[in-house]
Structures are given as C-alpha cells and as structure tokens.
Image (tube, rainbow, N blue to C red; front, side, top):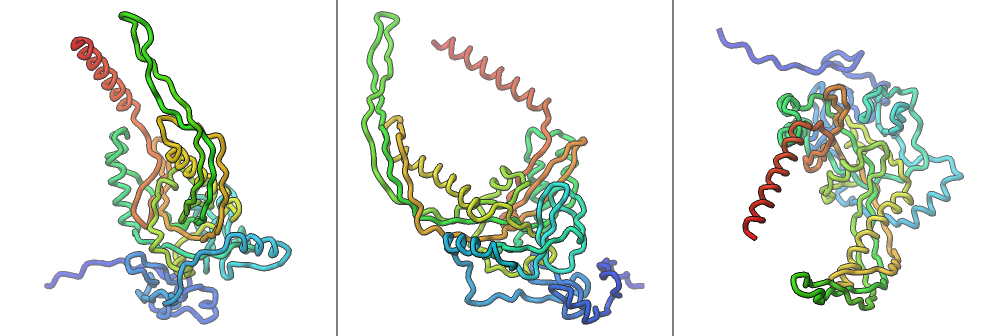
Length: 387
C-alpha cells in the first residue's frame, strides 16, 4: 500500500466562513483587502513581497504606480498647512484608525477589520471600542516593506542569544521564548543645507624642562591661537524615531536602515501588521534632528580648528532648504520573561539586525573582573622587574 501523503495543516477560515465559501458582498465592503477567491482578508507575504490569502492561497501583486517616488517634502510649507488645518474638521489618513493602549500609552494604527489585538509593547489586549479616527495627521510618504520574515528574525535572535558572553548558561541554552509582533514604526527624516560660522582657539602643546637632578621633568604647556571660519554642510536623511514608549537606545542601534528600499506609501503593505502613528509632531521631530546635526557640526568645528586641543567660543548655524519625509520602517518586536524579569528584543526587518535587553550572569562578570585584575597585577610585576 502506498504511503499516505504528509499532513499539511490548513488555517481556519474567519468566523462564519466555511472552507471554500466566499464572503458575502456586504461583508467584503468592511474588508480593506478582500481576497478575490474567497473574500477573506489578504495579508502581506514577506517572502513573496505580495498580498496572499491565508485561506485559499490567492496571491495579488502590490499595485504601485510606475512613476511614483518617495519625495522630499517642504518642511516650512507643511508647518503652515498644519497650522491652517487646526481649525478645520478633516482627516489626513482616510481608511486608517488609531488605537491607544490604556496600559502603556502607545498608539498603533491599523487598516481593515481589526477588532482586537495585542499591544506590541506590553501585550495588553486592544479593543475596538478604544478606536478613534486619526485626524490632522501628516501623510505618510514612504514605507520600507518587511524584508526579513518571522523565521529569519527568530534565527537571528537565536544567534544573538548564543553570542552573549555574559548571559547565564541556562538562558543561552534555552533561548528566548515568545511571539514576534510585526510592526511599522514611524520615523521622520530631515535634510538641510547648513551654513556655520565659528570662533574659537587652537591649542598647540610644547614642553619645558622643570626641576633639577633626579627630579628633572618635562612639563607640558599650551600655546593658544585665535581660530575662526565658516563652512557649509549638507545633511541627508537624519533619522528620528517619532514614537514614545519605545526602548529608544535599542531602536536607534538598529540603524542604518536600507532607506533606498522605501517605496511610496501603499496601504496594502500594512495588511497583517500593526503600524504606530507618530507621537512627536513634525516640528518637535526636527528639534531632535537639529540636536544631532548640532553635535555633528561641533565635531566638524573641532576638526577645522585643528591643533592639539580646541576651545569653541561660539557656533552660529543657519538651516536652509529643510525638507522631510514621513516613513514607516518595519521591526519585529518580542517581549519575554526570564526569572520573573521582563525584557524586550527588536529586530530590524530590513536588515536582520538584533538589539535587545538580556539577563547577565554576575558570576561570569565577577570571574572576568577577577581575571582582569590578576592579569593587570602580573603585568605590573613584570614591568617592575624589567625596570
């Protein structure tokens, strides 16, 4: 007798829909991306980069305009538009809704028939009655599609766990257990041509002999010379994560992002994923970006002054031709527990980079510190014998 074919589990259809049956037309209207085969909701397939029905297998290619592009937007023009809208009753993101988590305060955006889900940040259920329409929002310009699927993200996480030297042995052996949540995070990117003038001093070291006999030494002193100048620098795509309630240090460490892979905003890419809306408005986002630009300009001024040491007396910068983009960038997020402590891991779904919190083995750390002290003592002893 021939072997029976392997069993392949088939996803259960939505409530009220039997396998092979089609959703009535009146119910399809409530679905953002209805399957042309059975009427169920299509979901974005990371591997195929297309929409796919989890019930009947129907595949639909993403509909992107051939000449569409992710364009830079005029920063000051948008601020004026926002100010003018404040007295109007209008919505910028048609077909999208927002849910605010009452537990952690995070706000997520979704499209379609989502009635309940779990907050990707704290795991608390989000219910439909907490939905409010997204009003007076800056439109999304571009989306970086999920390029790393859930299985690859989990494999990268397993490798990340194995590479943590100071993690407890049982943690490394067991690994991280939990469910990845795919979510789009909101970002602002800013471009600006800056013109900077600076005044400072350049310090150059020199040495003079001091003391006599065995106490004779060389003492370092510094000559200071005036320094000033001006220069221009163009900043391109300064990234600012625009959501609160995130492990900001970990999210920033996910950079760089493959922004060249962004495509014009297409609501279809959100199918099956949550998407957070921005918490930092556009002007506050530029304030964060400006701080990062200022830090980079200060480093540049130090380099231009030169010498051995520098003093900066003043820096004045003018920011010209400011443009922005509102982007949605994909991450896999996972919350897990180890010995009654909560930890969080984030994976860049464009590159696979893993960042997160993990437990530490204080025994390993203590042994490493002790070994370092022993080596330092041995080194000092050998150095003393050679003198």
